[in-house]
Amino acid sequence: MIIFDSSIYVDDLRTGRYSDRIAEVGDLIRNFSVVLAELWRGATTGNENRFLLWLRDHYPVLAPTENNWLDSGRILQRIQQDHGCEARKLRDLHFDVLIALTVRSHGARLITSNRTDF
Image (cartoon, rainbow, N blue to C red):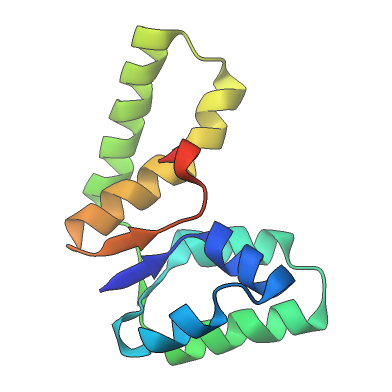
């Protein structure tokens, strides 16, 4: 099972850089509700919206469990306690922590081009 982070889809929409690789693993792809939400938040063109609808319709969509949500909050609390991050930075990290926990709980592999967040 493979889940692509929003960075892969954004890069691919802008440049076509990953199209061949995405096509190669087609049947292994699973969408993640948080990634789709991030992508829809930034979609500005009809082409982007059509692509997101196509993703939703062609690959199963996984969602975080209650435990994924609760664990993400606990992890962010520890990060705050250990590093004193600002609330804004914790908010920015929340979806990334949630993505990582959910991917792990499904035994999937996360593919991202944004290594600094993970």
